[in-house]
Amino acid sequence: MFRAVPVVLSLLALSLSASEVRAAQSSGTETAARVSGGKGTASDLLTASLKEMDIAENRTNLIKTVGTYCSEIKDSFPTNSPTERAWLETETSGDTKRRVRAMSSPEFGREKAQEFTFLCEAYTKEYEAGTDKKHQLIGIAHTFVRFSGDAENYAKINGIDGQKLGFPLLSFYAEVILKAALLETE
Image 1 (cartoon, rainbow, N blue to C red):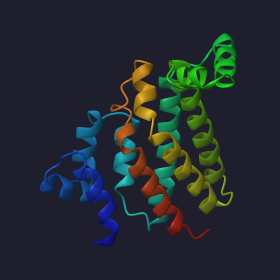
Image 2: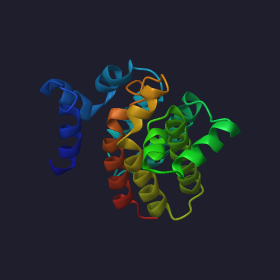
Image 3: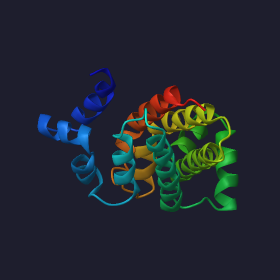
C-alpha cells in the first residue's frame, strides 16, 4: 500500500475515479490516454512511471523515456536568439522592476526550458553510461522539481500546451525518479 500512495495522490489530483486509479496502478494506459491524448512521450512517461521501480529493467526504461521526453520539450520551445539572450542578461542584471519584467517574459521561459532540457539530457546520458546511476537519478529528479513550479507558465507565455507535455505531473515524475534512485543498487 505504501508504494501506491504517491501514485494515488497524484492521480486523484487529476480528478480520476477510483476505478481509473486502480487501472492506472496496474497498467497506466487509461490514465496516460486521458493526460495526453494517449500519444507522445508525455503519455509514455506516465506509463513508464507507473511500473514497479524495484525492477531494474523498469528503471532503465523510465530513464530512456525521460531522455526522449526531455528532447520533446527541447523541440517544443523555441531557442532564444543572441539578441534575446543579451536582452535577458541585461534585464536580469538590472533593478527589481526590470528583473520582474524579464522573469515574466517568453525569453525567460525559453531559457528555463533550455536549462531544464540540458540538465535532464546530461543526467540521462550519464545514467545510461552507467556513471553513478543513483546520483544521476537524484539529479534528474531535482531538475524536474526545479522546473515543475513554473513549467506550465513558461509554456503558456510561449504559446505551448503544457498539459499536452505533461507539465502538471512533473512533481509526480520527480517522486517516481527519487524512488528509482532509492532502489538503484549499482
